[in-house]
Amino acid sequence: MAQTNSIISLESNSGNQMIYATQLYGSFFSIYGEFKSKVNNKHYEINDLLLTIVMYKGLLNIGISKAELKSNGNGLDLIIEVQAAPNFDIKLPVKVSIHPDCKCPIKGGTLKIVRVVKKIHDRPVNKVNHYVVENIFDDEFYYREGNEDKRERSPKIGTWENPNPEGEPWDGNLRCPRATHKIV
Figure 1 (tube, rainbow, N blue to C red):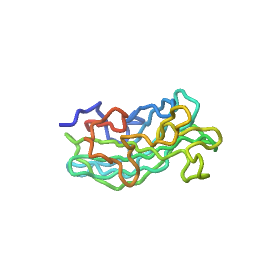
Figure 2: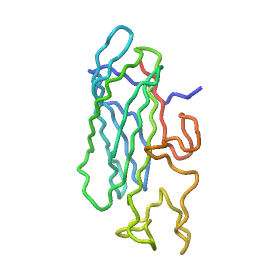
Figure 3: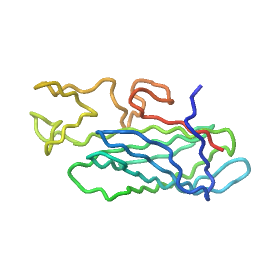
C-alpha cells in the first residue's frame, strides 16, 4: 500500500497547494498546484491545473518541460518533466497550465505524482564531452570521478517516455521522484 505524504483538495477555491518538493542539481524547489474543477455526482471534473515552481536556493533554475494529468480509476496521476536551465533565462516563478479534462472520486482517491528529469543538454554537443556544456556538468545523469566523468548514473532516472524505468513503486525511492497525496 502506498504511503500518502499529505492531503490535497481538488476544489476550485482551494488556491495554491504544495504538491511536490525536492532538490536537483543542488537547487531546492517546490511545485504548487491550483486546481479548477466542478463537482458532478461523486466525482470532481478537473478542467484546469496551474503548476507553479518556486525556487528556494541553488545556482540553477528549474523549469517544467511538460506535465500531464490523467485519471487512474481511483484518483489521478500527474507526471511532471523538469529541466535545469543554465544557458537560458527562466522567469521565476515558472507557471504551466494544463487542461486535463479528467475525473476523480470526491473522497478516498489519491493524487500520485512522478517527477522525471530531462537532461540539461538535450543532445550531444560534441563527441568528447557531451555531458559538459558551458562549464555545466550534468551530475544528475553522470558520475564525475577524476578524469573519468563519462559514466551514466544507475539506477536510471525516469524519462517522459518511461517515468518508471525499473518498475519501482509509486511511493518513492532514494532519488525522491514521487509523491502521493490523499484527496479530501
